[in-house]
Structures are given as C-alpha cells and as structure tokens.
Amino acid sequence: VKTKREDYKNRINKYEIDKLSDLDIKKMANDIIKLQRLYSVMTKNVIKKFETNTFELNYNSMSEKKMYGLELDHNISFSKVYSEYIVDKSYSEGIVAEDKVAVILSLLLPQIVKDMYSADFNKKYVLYMPSTLYEKDNKLKSTFGLFDDEYAKHSIIVLIDYDTLAENKKSVRNLIKEGYRFAVNLDQTMKVKDQGIVELMDYIFIDKYRSDREDILKSLPKEYESKVIYENIFEKIGK
Image 1 (cartoon, one colour):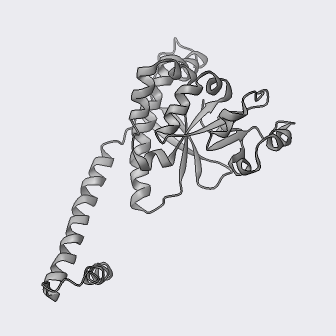
Image 2: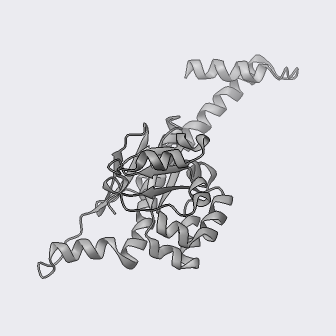
Image 3: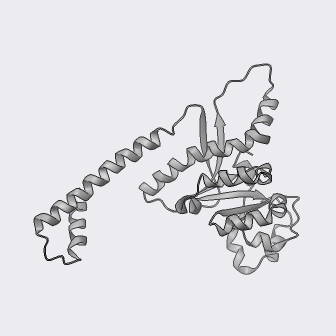
C-alpha cells in the first residue's frame, strides 16, 4: 500500500496542480486505494456467484503457449435406463450442445475477469460452437452477445470447422467485422476449396497427423504461416 500511495502521489504531482497541498494529494491517493479495495471485494463477490457444483469447466493446455481448449463436464445424475452412449450423444449434439455454449461462457467470463485483475493479458480460450447454431440467426446473435466486450473478444477464439465456415461465410464475415475472433480446423480429410475464407481466420488448426500438412502450409500466403497451429483440436475441446 505504501508503494501504491507513493506512485499515485507522483502521478498526481505530474499535473502540477498549484492549489493542491501535500495533504490533499495524500488524501487523493488514499481515496483511490480505498475505492480499488471496495471494487475488488465487489468483483470477487460477483465472481463467486458464478461458481457451481453442477458443471466444471476444464482448461486443456495446448501446444501454443497460453492457449486453452474449453471442455465442459457435468455432475448431473441420469437414470440407469439410459446408456452412457445415449447420455454422451445427447450432451454433445443438437439443442443441448447449443445451450452448453451459454454455460461455458458463464463460467469462462469470470475467469477472464480474474486474468485482467492479475494482468495476465495473453491467455486465449478456444470455444467450440456447434454447426447447428449457425443455422439459427437469432440464437447465434444472442450467443455472441453474451461476450460482446472488447477484452472478451480479444481472449475468446471461436472454433469452427471448415464445412460450417464455407456454408456460413457471410455470417462469419459480419461477426469478424464486429471484432469476434475465429479459428478454423482442418482435419485429416478436409479439402480447402476457398482460400479466402481461411485467410480471414485468426488461427488455423491443422491436424498434426495430416500427411499433406506441409502442402497446406505452402498454399497459404507467407504472412499467414504464423497463424498455423498443429493440434488435434477436438481432443482439447470435448466436442
């Protein structure tokens, strides 16, 4: 606190306000510190309200430093009538998969606030949105609206597979114009037919087991090579 107080006093003094005495400047510095403490407590209390025992968000480390794939686990009990296969399938497809995105974001956004508080500004979180969500304009808009914030847009990378990207070029272009960031996944079987839409991406994930991965890299303009990450991304996001 003493160091903070001195720092604030020095910053205030730079403005050379003649009417302020040393006592006034000291009081201003103390008021700033009190205000910071108040908002820090408020923020921690708000973040705590997002904690839940029903869901757990896993942050899976990737080969790219400070980049994490998001995977949502649940602690919901199901009747033994339903097989594990049926439960997993229901959990990862259709409306349930679409609604999972909102749950992931409600758990992720408090973590992003924590990153800001700890001045850890380089973390990137890869969020997968199912292809069916792009077919529903209103739901797509409301889902992206959940993180319509400049810092959140900077931290969250929306993962899209190539076929979904090719079918929804216009929607994705509009979202990119609004500041959202995307990554495309090129798995072992994917053939790139539209180079232009791939170049719009912030990151390009290429399956590290693709035999032609070097050919894909050569086909990209030189300046896009830094966007390429060799990663089996769907192993990291629990699709």
